[in-house]
Structures are given as C-alpha cells and as structure tokens.
Amino acid sequence: MSPVDRPNEAPGANIRISKEAIAELPLGQYEGAISVIESPEDAQAAVKKLQKERVLGFDTETKPSFKRGISYLPSLVQLAGSDHVYLFRLDDCGGIPPLFPLFRSAKILKAGVAVRDDIRYLKDRAPFKDAGFVEISEHTRRASIENTGLRALAAHFLGIRISKGAQVSNWANKKLTPQQIVYAATDAWISRELFLKVEAAGLISSAK
Image 1 (cartoon, rainbow, N blue to C red):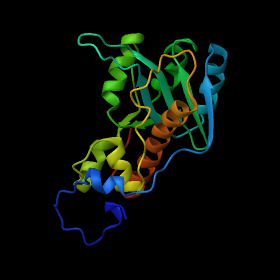
Image 2: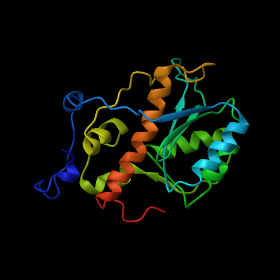
Image 3: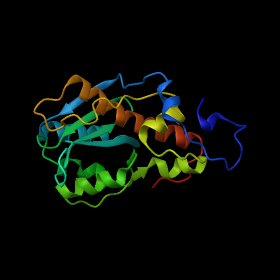
Image 4: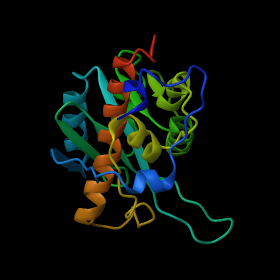
C-alpha cells in the first residue's frame, strides 16, 4: 500500500522506503506500444500526436562515462502519452528542435524526476526556453516522503519495483537492444503514472 493510501500515518512523520523493502515488491514494466524515433519525419509525426496530450512522462538517457573528466550529452528523450511511449534518438531524429513544440508549451505538462538536470543537458545540445516541466519529487515531499528517486517513488506510490539493469548501457549505440527499449519506455511511463497518482492524492495543487 502506498503512503497516500495510509490514513493512519502519523502527521509530520518522515517516510523513507528501504532498498530491502523495494526488492520485495513485484517487478513492473511498460507493456504498451513503443515507437523508436530515428528520423526527422517520424519525429514531426510523433510530436503532432503528443501535442494532444495533457500530461507526458518525461525522461532522458545518456551514454555513461567511466573516465574522469569525460561526459556526454543526452542520446535519448523518452515521452510517454496515455497509450504510447516515444523514444527519440537525438542523433538520428534531428536533435532537440523537433521537440521544441512540446518543450516550450506550458499547456502540455512534462513530468519526471530530476528534470532540471535533464533540461540543462538538453539545452547544451540546443538552447530553448522551457515551460510546463514538473518535478514530481517537489510535490511528493508534501506527503513527507524523503526518497526523491524514480525507483523509490514508484515503490511508494505505485507499489512496484522497476529494474535499473540497462541504466549504464551505451545509449549511443547504433541500435538499441530490446532491453534498453523497454527500460527507457518504462521510466517515462512510470513518470506519467506517478504524476497522475500524486495529482489524484491532492499533492499537486497547481502544475503550470
């Protein structure tokens, strides 16, 4: 049972879920439609569909660096709608500009965890004025949740465990593996589901 469903929780009590408790939860992953976007034309069509959504789950993936002083820019942007997740391969689909209609819109909410870092790194690829991004952890703190990571929040509010097995894989590979595709789609889907759960619990009074 998630904290928002616990009416007897002591007021003001800080809540933290342990790694051991998370490990006992059932594994959850996205099982719906996924599109990997690898051309500017497909990016334009996907963005047109996503512009019809009120809330999008948002995340990015970056090639990991194992050498000090070396870092990379995001390779992938994941956006989850109500029934479809789109994975935009930035090196192939035209980079960030095709996503500007979504990223600049205050009417379309883009919900995620640690979104400010994601936005900052995306702007290093192509500057843009962001609007409508929602940091979920800022709102879950209203329920005295100490955990701020996506995995812990999924455990708290959705009662599932999400795998991090593909997290440090090479997201700049010419072809994504099936495991990478499901992992990336799951993170965006979880972000959207978390937003809706937290919103329904009354923890998001205004998301603009």
